[in-house]
Length: 106
Image 1: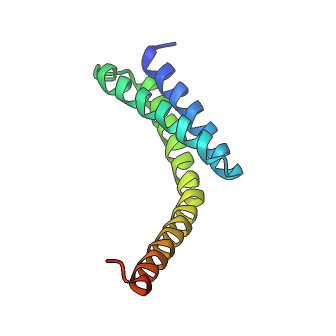
Image 2 (image 1 turned 45 degrees about the vertical axis):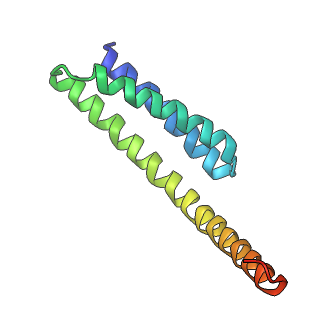
């Protein structure tokens, strides 16, 4: 098997694990996997420069579609969680502002 496909298969494996972590709400594990994913992508950018044959191109395209599907599934889980976290942080900030206003601190 060629190195290009091996890299995409490895990346696909990571995004699959990321998808599972997001579905289970395992946010710390998801962050760790995202770091691995980012490192692999950086490595692939350096290595994936040579032209490939048609069969390799098709395999690569199929793996990219799977990676993009994983990404969409991950976003569908993380975006609502991030929005909730942002609301909590804004609420906390407003509470702190009110406490300072009523205590005379600025």
